[in-house]
Length: 448
Image (cartoon, rainbow, N blue to C red; front, side, top):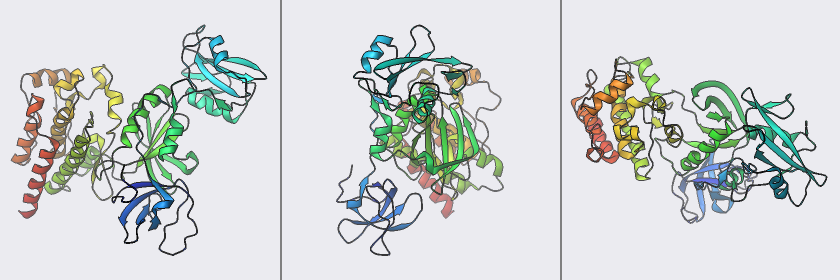
């Protein structure tokens, strides 16, 4: 973290207090918890020009009123469900809920009914155990009110007594866990569900829908992950995303914990690169624009490489285009949740390096994927390895087969693609080298 004596342009800060009645017209208005981005330092010590992340307003602020937004430390103890104690017995649960306190609660796995859970609630100096039945892919206590996950169930009974003895008041955390809600709020990444309005579905991932929405007037894209186990897995990857900030990475705005996990990202109005290319084609998009997209992606990947972060699913479908035609990498923190799976039918084989199919992921396996991405870009969004099955792709690559260059692809780009597809990962170029070569290629194209 940088010293508060100097914050670089682009540093994100969290307001420590309300500043709604400025003493001078050039001062920025904000409320406690608002996210502000430093534009530049002023001559006056401790004063900066800043931009409000949601309203877009710019003005002056003093460092005393804000703190730098912190990255979330990736910690296995971080839990969306600190009240979940796993497989413990009823007597152990009673012991955990001492001393008695009305509304103190925990959830445990049912030993008597495997697959079900038990909600244990302290009330009137007793601990009452409610069986949570798993039925028709939902959870219920009374078979009248059903929930998609435990988080949703707990949220409901913290608001209303419903079918149980008392409203849930205070969770009993499992020893050694940390509340994700507390950690996200402390670091400035927890957003308020009341400020989010959700609109149309703009995508569908394996783990849930992607929706367009608004957060305090700002257009956003929202990933909603309702499965509590998957949400917990995504939490660690989201924490990794708080550490990175680059003009060619889709920006994480924050997280909402409500009925699972909402990941709130900046909205990219022109959608995915693959659809952008397919719907416009050669007559609309010239070679210079293709090179610019390639350079944008290599720039973002060079940054991730410098941070020792591996994407694992680099492809045109995961590159999004802004209203200004800037290509940005998405899902860079989330891809590895999916790719932990050993089911090869769920791995994007046509983009995945041979060694990565054996779960040996590295920056060099991302470079292989970048070569396939270049092929997608210069073929205007065609699917790679046309007419080949996944099995044939694996077999032919092992025997040295590489795709032919797309029609009208510049020879220098063909050479670059093939350098990414070296069988030996150590012989593949770094993203820094790829970026430098693409910069030269774009400059030559513009001057020619």
